[in-house]
Image (cartoon, rainbow, N blue to C red; front, side, top):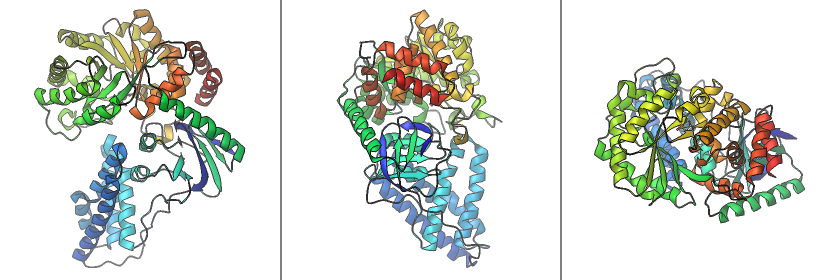
Length: 546
Ligand code: PEP
Ligand code: MG
């Protein structure tokens, strides 16, 4: 039997099916003990959990290490201990932990954005601490002896981060979208992954195959089919390993392949890949923990690290602070908003806090002046051409190349008028799909709508690319869509001139582009645009590109 979900990390995983252990239930008849003893029991259990997660973080790297360390920090957090203390007089340690987490989770959910996303981590901490208190094995993913595939309803970020790609060769998840934590970490670990498999059986099924390229999950597959797909995947991987850039189709049509970065150390790692520069530098991610605006000099030093990593002549597209909604910045807080994703975020913050943008542009200009990188600057969340005009004036007066992100349908529809003011645009497909389909990019239950293969999204991208061609100006894509090798070819066929994605994805994107002609990409684009739905779009593109 074959099931279908959203493919997020290409590759083939096959083997026996394993599933995460059952959640440990807090016993309803847990005795109430001495308050201090309950607080002490919680503290000891939380410390043991934090130490185990920290030890696992030490053996991981990148996003996986960050997630493990953040979950360890949450277990050791004094706030959680305080909430447990409130219940310690009337409940046993496991019950007090569960109640404390319920209260905190309700607060996080009400805060929305990044806080709400952390509720999964909070529940994960609860399950680990309760297991420790009850003296039963920690819940989570088993470590199978033979290469296996993992089926789960959803995975805690700490569980995904701790996966060993030698033992877990593929992941299929019932929930989760292309931008979920599971997807991001699986991509970093290089584990083939399919999310949003609505009918994934949560029991039964001896073996399975996960095809992270097509989104198929085959239950009890034919061994010959497994072998054939594994051989094709091996060929694809070795093409990626030997791809040296620059981004070109087989017949020489240039499409720049760039990496998305967020800080100096990450930029050094990304620069080691065969990229022509960085197509999205998410500057706000360096300042998530700051309560005060960093000075111009400090900002210039931070940006300078990324420019230095890029090297002489390499393109670096700096994005101005994208604060608000899913990336709250304390020093650019706009207060309570009923709907932060539709509120004052990104460039809109400069309306009431113009100094934040001016200081950042001064810092970028300062760092660019000291660097040999080719620095371009763009702003997020631009909705109308007049915003692009005002931004371009500020950038040009500082001698900087000016651009905007196309993340709203309004900017896509009037891309030709936006391009009258700026030197380039870059399409942020993560937000453009959120706003086009009125579907929260974080909501896993809506991931079928925010699928980057949605034909309506592709129609908007085509419109922007055509506007770029008419104006003779570059049009990039820097959302998750650019990390999908097949979709990258469709984007090239639509007329996009650069693709920027996670550094771990650049080789598969570059290798796939180099194996097809521009005419094939254009045919794939036509097929995908005319398709009825994302699945049909993938199939049409695959047929044109094979
Ligand atoms: C996007 O929206 O596609 C994008 C690249 O920006 P971010 O994911 O940082 O919002
Ligand atoms: Mg965005």
